[in-house]
Length: 211
Image 1 (tube, rainbow, N blue to C red):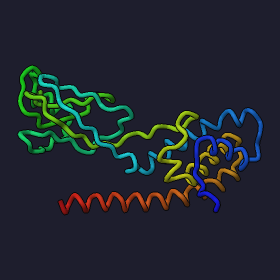
Image 2: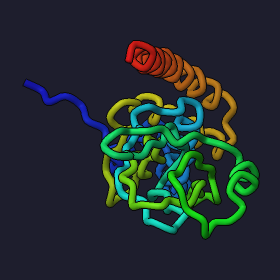
Image 3: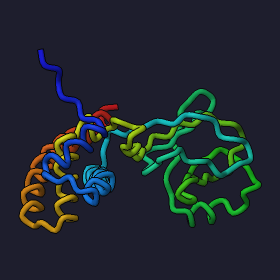
Image 4: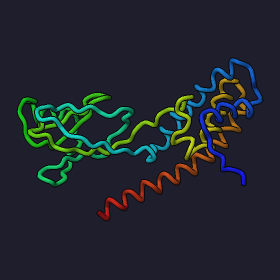
């Protein structure tokens, strides 16, 4: 029995020049760039639920700045546990938090959070205890390279990744006919992924409404 095809970074790097029928070094050197551009494009178009991640830890009493996890992309929800009960911490604008709690040295039970910068959150009030917290967030997918052979794209979107990379290559080669051909293939597979992704989002919203 023939084993099912599983895309890896190395197999994709090997397949691209075969489809292009190109072996010149200039094109081969650009293959990682074609792949990286396509990963970013797919992630932007889909807002992928495949990289929905949970972080759990504890706040530190007296500290109102929290480190975001590596590859954080977008926060979905934030809650803390108070006396054994989970309570939501609500998203507000940074300016709102500063006006609401102008004295960071004062402490109380946190009620609001905001993006402080790309790598930190800010919360208000400044916590008066080391509350356990849970944050649900979108994580940027670890990009493919020789040391990271598979990720969400190779597992769930191999066709889109392949034809998107080929489309980027055709742009580099200034071949509009190939660009159009690969664009059509890419759009076809992306449409299917988009429908599937919307169904996942709808299912998740239904679960939240029923909870």
